Length: 164
Image: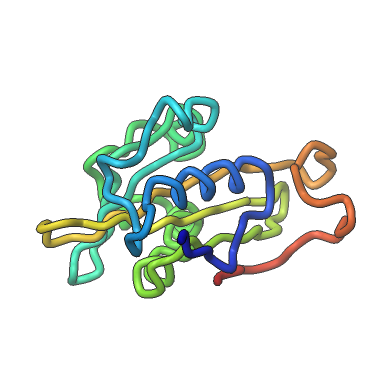
């Protein structure tokens, strides 16, 4: 029997990634990094990052998709979130600790001045490592984008984090 999370995603990309996370975790609380199949997530890889959070709360990028490098201003692999401009650090900090503490997917949409930031955080089982890993998916959408993947029954913008 597969357990489900309460958060199933706000757009089709988030739903695809959460579905894969749920399948590969099986009966466990969360999947390991090695369980994630990049081939299955191929169409989303450019918007995926992986962040390692150590027990002191320091967060570092371990993987950064090509589309995210454009948003972040360059390659961030191995670099701390603290090295980012404050607005970008805040974007990537969203939901990290909540996903780790709850052990479930966390996501939401933040309306910003010129766009909307759709974000997703999925915790990964660290195994014997001393840090926690979080698989992240982030996209920036225009305010007037029609192809957002949001259910047509709820056309209103969603504000703030949503978690299971």
